[in-house]
Image (cartoon, rainbow, N blue to C red; front, side, top):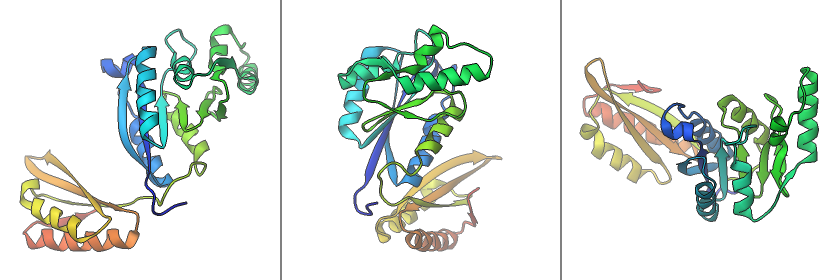
Length: 253
């Protein structure tokens, strides 16, 4: 793994139900966390409806810009599950019934006393040249083709697919993160945060304000690829915030 190059990724969330607000997305957060451990930075997230041309346009843009692209949603058995077709169109390849995917689904439904119906067989459709991402939860596999990973919309199924991919992608050094918090307005410590980020090369500090119990506070997340740099920055930041008159809570508030 390279410690110099920064590997990047994007997530394309597909589904009218997300855009309508009826379903709350949980996949972006878990994919971002997983990518950090793989040494890959999530740089962009897009949400598009179940419209083939919009999915294709988004895929074309994201694949050209990032090392990896992950899609979630639209790979089920129903008529509006069109992600496979859109991916194939974006890649300029055909769609096939993948023999291994078909066999997996046949075993899955047979073991449960069911049949591989035409609707369920849709989940064996893959762009030509695709590899399968194992799915221990519901049988239907995800898809890996080049730098593109096509995953389920159901969060616990996506989590299983990510687990199957762990350690298989090329990336850089994993991010190390440490959180501290203080009951302080952001504006009162803004200069302290800016100075700390300037003084510690390679460290990024995120500030996340909140309002609780009638009080204003913020949590500060220090991130870097070197644990020693994170620890040194946290120590300096803690000292400066406390010197400004605000008690610091390690681990955040």
